[in-house]
Length: 562
Image (cartoon, rainbow, N blue to C red; front, side, top):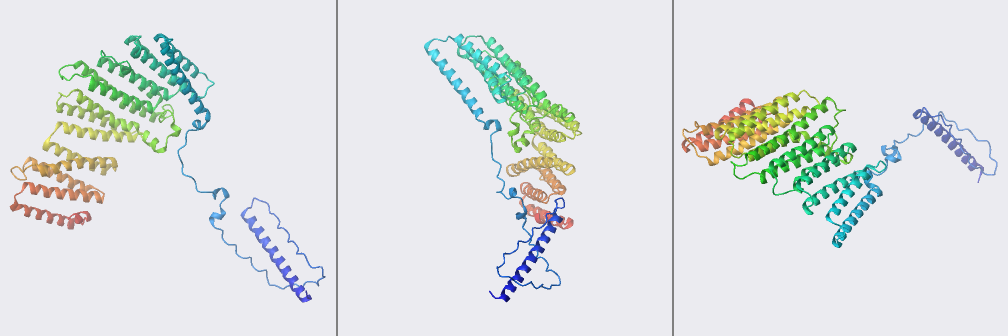
């Protein structure tokens, strides 16, 4: 290598070292500005480049006015600045998972063990019966002993909660099966003794559910208690006895619900109670309406009791919860609440609203079937009185902020009952007049209160009225005088109510739908009532009137309709 080439290489190396050192200082300064709490780390010294063995002359300094500015640092994309844990794969969609205790092997081993034990007991029973070793009383005694043993083991404090529920529930189920077998299969005890035993088992189940604070045990007691009359069924049973016993069981279940708030128990009680009442209605009443008045009054009393228990009691508890939420808790089902999805929680939280609507309708339907000889006008006045009750409760609940929606539900239920009462009290033209007026009133209230539910109720009611009007226009014949008879005036009133709804509605689509329906209904009314000589003139006058109104009010919906 020549001397000139060595000098040139040396200069390049020194220039490179100077620029690297300057860049390190700039980076160190930027780090101090971005992290003021972290001490400054001195930049590492530049590593000297290994030189050739040949001596070199003193370097010639390179004159520069100022060091060149550092090259701009390219902006780093956002995903490069994210920590590594955020750069992982996108979050997985949440899938169904078993509860934590069900993901343990001990859970399934315990259930498999219980199943094997029960299978062995059944096999031993079967074999012993075939060999004649076990007499009927020995079998009953064995069942009672097994039930007591399971309940005693379930009371041990050292076992896990899920195993405790399994043992206690198994003991209660064993008692129910033993009582059923002793009466129905083996015929060892009388009906009265078996009934007393089953009632005692139901009471024990409710007591255990309260002591252990387990809603699942109360469900078992409700199902077993309501099913006892059918497990101990005889041909000599009476409907008053069935109703009295059912009301007794419902008193226990509703009391537990009132103090514990277990909604699962409320729903099981409601479904089971109404099912028993339905069986009593279809199987226990005499076909002769003049006979069995005592049974009918007992059934009617049970229906009223069920209405109060499944509607008034939950509403009362909601009022207490609004006043003192800490004292009156509101669990969802009372068990597996943590495993319930958000959608299911939203549905379960509306249990009082659903029962407010369902309970009176079921009670009314079964009551009318219980007394078919009662005239519809009497039922209309009864339903009208119930309407006043629901509106009064809605008025009292309106000041409760936490349950104001419940007041809204009662008000809507009152509207539904009013519609039913009008249908029972009125008929023909008068009923059409009343229902169309009610639909228009609901729309006016929805505009005043800005309540979507009221608007939906009004739309549904007017759809029913509209279908009825179509049937009247197509099937009924005209009467005299034309357009001035009761039939035509009632139909014309429906058209007027449709116009009122269209004029007061804030929705363009709703306004246009009601305008089209009203204009079409008026044209159909002209076709039915008027003779061919003046029918064309009436239709032309209607079209001109629509166009004039559209220009007068500059209404886009009216313009499109015309």
